[in-house]
Image 1 (cartoon, rainbow, N blue to C red):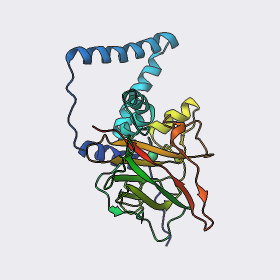
Image 2: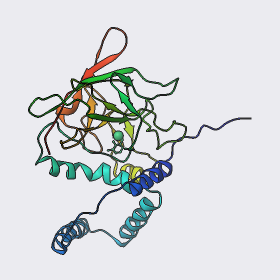
Image 3: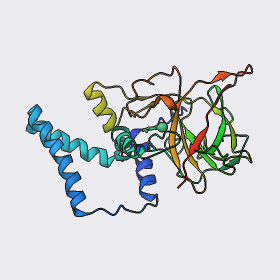
Length: 281
Ligand code: MBD
Ligand code: FE
């Protein structure tokens, strides 16, 4: 008998991302009719202008409708919005912010992961692939005060570029954890080097990317959410110097301040350090 290895599908990760998004608690924004009208009018004007400028035809208009329906049917709206739109929302929010630079959240965050005290190793499979990676650093206020008991919530793709919770055959919670800083605000995390992430090529977002002749890659990255009482939570990502796609992220979510340059400590572990500065509020 042969066994078939399940490989992750766009519809699988999309459905999980959509149900995860819908079940997250969030309060709707309080938006006036004037603001709804202003923003939606601007969005529609952009669409109308593109149709006029490029002479969009009826077959193209109907293909666009079919594509939009498919994005919803396979649950890829979180993926599409976070890849192509979120970076500008983050840019607008960042305008008002102090402290460590943020980046986009993306579709693959899961709350309530295992709590670990520093130093620690992220949960992983016995045969987890990937080069050993160490990330250490300090969490502090923008005035320099160390923040003990802060949460460094970290999640990342595995050495094949897949996230636990969004691909079959990866144990839940793999390569995810919430690390508490010690009395000096320090943390030290052992994990493995993630691979670059490829937008699933078998779904509508991937098909659009291919039809447009773009590439579907994000550079390798770590996702982090850093929380401390009385401080604004920082949602960010860390990248790797020299990494593939660093200068052409499909999600346009890299920033020069967010690039690590890990160095082998002589034992085969590549180590980097990064400090987080949180503003009060
Ligand atoms: C990712 O891993 C990611 O971080 C973003 C922002 C979008 C798609 C996949
Ligand atoms: Fe990611």
